[in-house]
Length: 563
Image 1 (cartoon, rainbow, N blue to C red):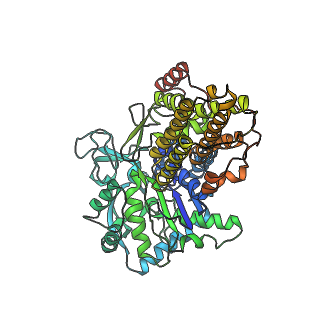
Image 2 (tube, one colour; image 1 turned 45 degrees about the vertical axis):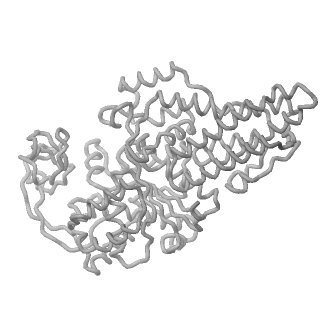
C-alpha cells in the first residue's frame, strides 16, 4: 500500500471551451481525477484539486467567428455551462479556473522570459500560409485544400478526414481560406520555437525513472527518438500576447499547461492567502498527479516537463500521469457535428449523477478504448446497483426494521461471522490499493464483490429462519449486525465514486455525517447496539427496457442529443 502523501496536487486536463462536456470527457480525465481527490481527502491528505477551461487557440477563434460570436462571448458560454455540468455531477474541484483570466499571463510570461534567458527558445523564420484577400496569416484550422497524400479536395489544414494523413498546412495542394474560400500563398514570417532537442536529454533521464502505464511510456519514448524544435507562437490576436510582437500570441499548447499554475494562483487569491499556491507547487514533497486523456500525453509528459526544466522557479514536475484511452458511444466515436453525442443536461433529468458516475467508472477506458452503451447503463444499474449493492442495503435495513425493533442489534460472533468480517476487511484493503493506483474499474469490481459477499453471507445465515425461534434469535441479530457492518464498509469505499448514494446509505445506518469523511476511522467505526435506524428507503430504482429504447431512439434520431 503506497504511503499517504501529506500534500497532493491533482489536476484534471483543462477542458477546451469550444463545446459541451460529454461522456467521453468524463471517462477520459475527469471522473478518475475526482474519485482520486475524494479518496485522498478521506485518507487525510491535504488535497488541492484543480481544473478549468482552456480558452485560447485558433479553434475557438474560428468557431466563434463561424457562430457569429466574439471569442470572449464564445468561451463565456461554454465555461459557464460546463462548470454547471460539473457541479450537477458532484465534482469536488477546489477551484475551476479559466485561462482567459488576467493573472494567467503572469506565469506564462515568466516561463517564456526564463526559457529565453536560458537559451531554450529562439526566434526563427518560417513559411506560413497567407491570405492576400484577408491580409493575414491563417493558422491550420482556418485552411482547407487538397490532401498531399490522397488528393481529397476538402482536407483540413493539419489532417485529412478521408485518409487520416497528418501534415503541415503548407503541404496542402491549392490551399484556400476556410472562411472566404480565397486562394492562399506562402509568406515568410517569424515565430518563437522551444528547442526541445536541447532539453530532451534531461527529459529522457527523468522519464527513465517513471513506472507509468506502458502505453504512456511508449508514447513518450517514441516521440523523444527524434525531438525537434516546436513553434510556441502563432499569428493571431486571441491568446496571450507575445511581448513586443504585434499580432502574435503564444500557441495554446505552450500556455495552456501553465494554466494549472495560474489556476492555483487564482485559487489562492480567492482564498484570502495569495501565497498559498506556493505551498503546493514549490514543495518538492507535494505529490503532483495529472489526469489526462491519451491525446494529451505528449503535452503533459514531454513538453510541459521540458518547459518547466528550462525555466527558473522550483515548480513541481508531474509524479503520476494517469492517461486514459478514449470512450466511444454505441460503436462510434462521439461527434457533435454528426449528432452522435449525449446531452448531459438532458440525461441528468432522467438518471442520477451516481448512476452515470458508476457506469462510467465500471467501464473506464484505462488500458484500451471502451464503449458506452445504454444497454450497459441498464445492466450496471439493474444488475449491480439495484441487484447487488441496493439489494444488500434494502434486505438488511428492512430486516433490522421489522425483526430488530428498528435499532442496531447486538452481535455474538461465531467462527462463520468472524470469517465474513475478515473477508470484508481484505476486500476493503484491496479497494484502497485500487484507488491509490487509479484503477476505477477494479474499484467497481471490488464494490460488487463486497456486495455479493454480503448477500451470500445473508443467504447462508438465513436470518428469516433464525428469527422464528427464541434460541436462535442471537444468531439472527448477529447476522443483521454483520450485514450492517458490510453496508458501512460499502458506504465508505464507494463514496469517491457515488457521493450522494453513500451519504444516503450512511444516514440510513444512523451514523454521524462528519465521520463519513475519514477513510480509516469510518471503516473501523463500531456500530452502537440499540442505536435507532431511520425508516429504510431504496437506494436505486430499475431502468426499464422502454426507457432504453427511448434513449436509443433519441440518439439515432439525432434531434435531441445535441451536446
